[in-house]
Image (tube, rainbow over all chains, first blue to last red):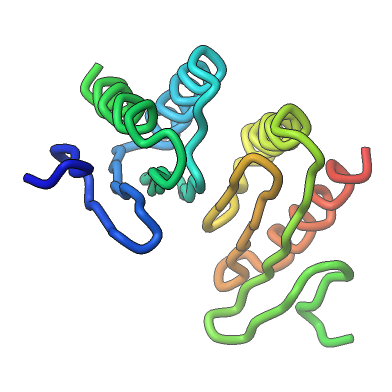
Length: 84
Length: 84
């Protein structure tokens, strides 16, 4: 596994970023995940580059171009929100 | 203006949908808009097909394939949230 890869996430080199699709069986679950993601962002000051969601999914892209280590740790924490 | 077009939104025929980009000067404003959009969706039972956002923008796509009139009214209400 390369330096910038994080388990469960797709790593892309140009621009350096992580992306991942999270699926949910209801809008309530989707919304709950988005709310917890927002709380995590407010706590850490780190935000996904883009968040794309419908009623049953959330696609995230996290940029690693600046402060890669912090954003990798953020990606791990986001994955933990999904399992929680 | 064609039947399914709504002022301020881009209409696409296949699939029949409306899309629009909303821009904000801060994440707090972006988040406030998303929260009000969520409240509107919960009140109306109508949701965008997809919501894509970063810290300073929200891109929405609203499907018109089913219940076009209800979703057109929803699009107008979403536009009013932006001006509010």
